[in-house]
Image 1: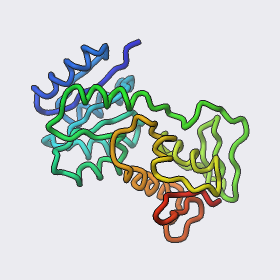
Image 2: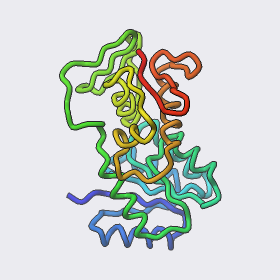
Image 3: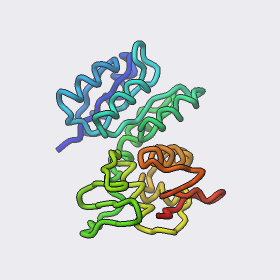
Image 4: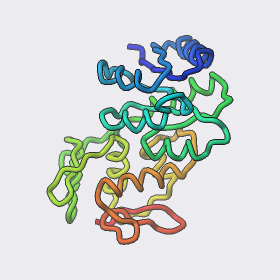
Length: 229
């Protein structure tokens, strides 16, 4: 079955150009021109595999739209940003974007990025563990996709869960950022290694953890991160 892509940009020419290349690669494509329509579409019919979302739109922009979307959906999102707007890219990653593409771009690059993101699995390995990972204060149940801290469930996105799993499966081991990218995002990831720092920060916040006094995830300065529970 063909995968379904939603292309969102207020500029009709850009939408049509991106959509035409995706259709030529056998994707099913829908087009929208504003953020509220995206939220309504996903709430009404969530069967979308990936969204290509422009940051700079009138009304609620792409970042506000993504922030609202993440309250109820974990759909893959690639953001389109202006080349000079690094702040937009970092904010987009912090609120849950999978990747970003800077304008101007080649439509073929968009197709390649879409394929790369869709190849990433929602779990860090194909192995299914029958026993939960149990530590002092935290339990990671792989099969049920449930995390509890002090016996209270914690709401994590799929990416946050996979990041926690990658660390917790090897407690005490120090992972460099590129190693976590390989395990969680996949070897075909495009982008900057700092995406790991952003998502570790979000994961810590969800777990009630602290970078300065880590209970679960410790920063190893100049190297990466390790699970210490």
